[in-house]
Image 1 (cartoon, rainbow, N blue to C red):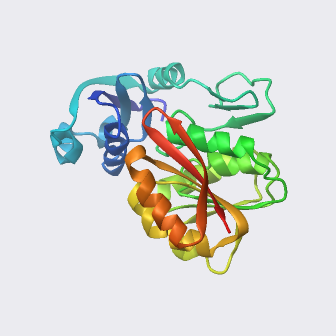
Image 2: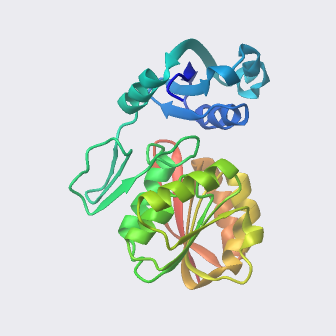
Image 3: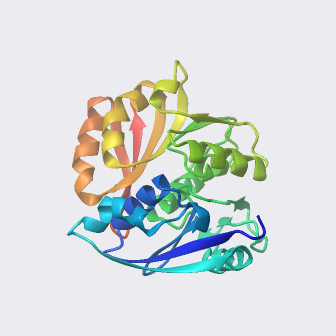
Length: 279
């Protein structure tokens, strides 16, 4: 492994969202291992032995006329790749009490210190939607609560819920890499009572939850809201994110149909998060 060489693809993206999220998803499907978002776009890494420039021709987002995307390529040796990753991955402060950081960052003096090695998974706290969901958890009582983290990515939301005192926690993601990465991160943060599952809402069975966290795209949320309502305890809370201002009416109408009523709206840049209560 010491002799591994990586290809770094440096993408410039305008506008950044939602193109960055779509690009990362498509790159993950063709073998890219790691991503670092920055103010210009994203750095993406793949092992040289897995790489051919023809792979990029399969990326639909590059042909989307709504976005301007260009890229540059260079080779990086393993030891330089590690240094580059560390220099580009900054710790994230959420409020006064929580920091999300990588293992190589200095341990901060905060109540909730979350150590995440994201690899190809979504959820480092850098993205606005993850940041808002973390803020929701900080602002609410999770002591002795049962919690579902749906579309869990790195597992960061489930981990903070555990640190806040939740006792029964399930983290579910349909992506195999996210499933494996969440298990690693949960172990890294000594939150071994979190149950990690690979799949979708079909895994929920008869389980009921006091809190459901779902940071997923609008279409999946709309499809799964009836399941969330069915598996949420009376007076339970549902936190949603992963969508824009224009999606609020659609999501609110669907939630109302199933006895879920909006109590709070959060905004960060163009992204939205909503809090619903079952009553």
